[in-house]
Length: 347
Ligand code: PEP
Ligand code: MN
Image (cartoon, rainbow, N blue to C red; front, side, top):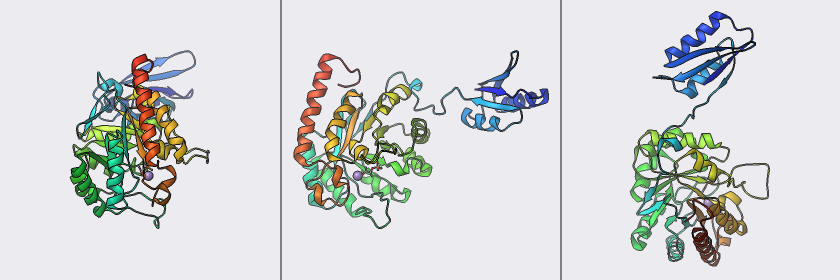
């Protein structure tokens, strides 16, 4: 970290800054030029991490600015692994260079709706089934999901079809019930910064699908992943699902640049959710293909047998034929990419 001192800083204030830094385990070096003075701080055996130390130094008298050079996340940082990590979910590997599609209805509405959708997406090449039992709803009067009853249905469908399942956990009190069924636990956008929830899923060894908060920077998103990793669970897959911008035409603004950016910053696999990212059915296929071209490890796609009568997110859910067509297009694109060697990450 580099600390710029103010022009009126006194020798005793400089001493005080250095004393604090040493106390927190940093080696402090004073750099004096003609008109400016800096303190360079390097972590040796720090007891206060750099993020926190920078915050504290900023408030000390005589300090003008603090530039934090290191990354605040460690376990999920690209530098912490020699290779990108792979996450195995019910024998499906995410992050191995293939483009995996996770699909299903937004919400579990009935057993028939669930199994019909699951059968269709599985037959058309989806690697995992994603379906919601506990649903976050902006309005307290909106549909909240069928809860444990839906988990039962999911469990039956999973056994019957032999497909791995992903479902959302919203409340730590449901960790046991969700863990009994889920091969992968989804943490939704609204809970990306629910640190107690992150810590709890971090204590399990169940893979976690961590959606990006709708207002989260890449750094905040990676710090949320760090919470999970810090508890010992490093089976984390990130999911870009669109961020909130001034644009109203789409439900969110799908930030596809997050995909290659995350690949530079972290070793974790990253997938894209074009359904919530756009909120419009017609935009889902092109953005899925764009996600593959950008190097994503997969996509999360909402599919419904009759989207017009869906309880939730019908507008953005693909009809069966559209999903089947998209899967063919994904395969064609991935084959062509692999053959040409054009895009590094798509296989
Ligand atoms: C969902 O996946 O159905 C969902 C509610 O997503 P998000 O948390 O991204 O809004
Ligand atoms: Mn949804």
